[in-house]
Amino acid sequence: MNEKISQLLEQIAILEEDLRIAVHEQEANALFQLNGKRVEFEESVRQTHLRLKKSFFHWVVTYRPQNLITGPIIYSMIVPLAILDLFVSFYQATCFPIYKITKVRRGDYIVFDRHQLEYLNFIEKFHCTYCAYGNGLMAYVSEIVARTEEYFCPIKHAKKVLGKHSHYVRFLPYGEAEDYEAKLEKIRVSMGKNNPPNEKK
Image: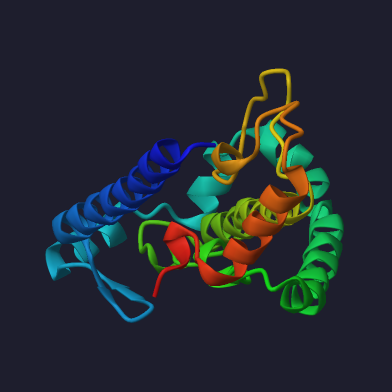
């Protein structure tokens, strides 16, 4: 990858992060304020949320029966999710320092804040907590695996790949064998020096 493309990719990454922060700040200013880990709404908004909250009985009566029936299947997935979480977290904790790869911050991906929404009843809050864990865990694991791939085999595929992670753009072209080992070593060294955009302090 030539220097100009590398610089452009770096600029794109910075702009994407700036955009993400700006959009989040705009949403926060319009609807809520963050006070540490606490989400705070204006009193009028909070009262509206409380008024719109469905009682447990009303929720059960109006809830889709197929969702209740399949609930045990969905929640049984907590077992493989927890095992995946344990093993991948252990792998990162033990191996990333050896490889000198910047660790993935768990809290950037697994976020629990929907339980603070007053218009959700306790069952809905439980659902949201489970979904936040499951999806956050997948993103957390994906980032750990992406950094691992960048360290061991940062080579693009010959075929088009859907769902590429953010590190993929920095991978080496498929079939470019010249100076491969030197380029691989350069990538590995850079991984310990440069934090990804969302990891900046």
